[in-house]
Image (cartoon, rainbow, N blue to C red; front, side, top):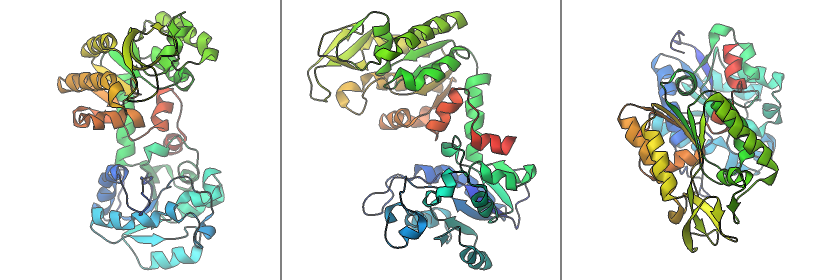
Length: 400
């Protein structure tokens, strides 16, 4: 983006303003808006004008229905005042970005910042309708995609729109560029030893990620519910823990693939187990392959946490996606906290740490350790697909 002359140009920019809004219409977390500010301020500082487009939630009604009261809680008009406060200038809101007369009237007033209504009020957005993409493109002279969180979606505003701009007039924003650079650094360019830490409920959700990472990292630390599928696949007794019995063959195959690629998959030796899915349940520490009937593993145990900490301490590049247990409950947060502290320690000593995925990001913030990480990704599904080795439509559309 910094190679473009933006003075006097209208920049139509895809941002990710999909922020949480409470019943009173108040934004409860502005992190996604804050992450976009450097790009917005750069364009304005270079003398450009901004036309911002985003989605908000998953509305069921079309934009015309919203005018009559349906899905008002999904209107981006709710974020205008917050955006004005952060930019220190007025923001013109366009309630129907497909209305040519509204577009003409808005642009005639020559505003420095325009915000278009929620793109997902238009079925054409998710269909990647090229006529709709061309209409969006007509708002600007330059297209900037700064919404990494939606880069894995082949939608009109993330993929189709790019073809209506010449290659030198379609670019990544500062946030998007940082996401791409940091993912490349972790996956391809970072120093060894490289370690990936993966949590989550299901092996099926992380199957392709583990396959891809086996070829790129030296070790993978497994936590969360999916660790019990691996344990059960090896003949372990896992009580009432989460388990995908139809993924036993996949689990065994992944262990064999990792060994063939020279990557060590570490499974938790012990677990903090409970007799109910509750913070107030009775608990005991058990070997992860010897959990009593009617008990369930809800966190990695102290032995596993100590071992994972040792592995992380030797690493130079670490990727963390997915908590080690049900960290939202205080009784089962010790494993995730130990991992977060280990990452903070090595990061402060010069190692590179990338944290991505909503739960992992929430965990490092909850433990007050976010500032110690090298990079915290804004993408959930987008980062997962990058880790799987997939080509993201929002990136391909710019870079092709």
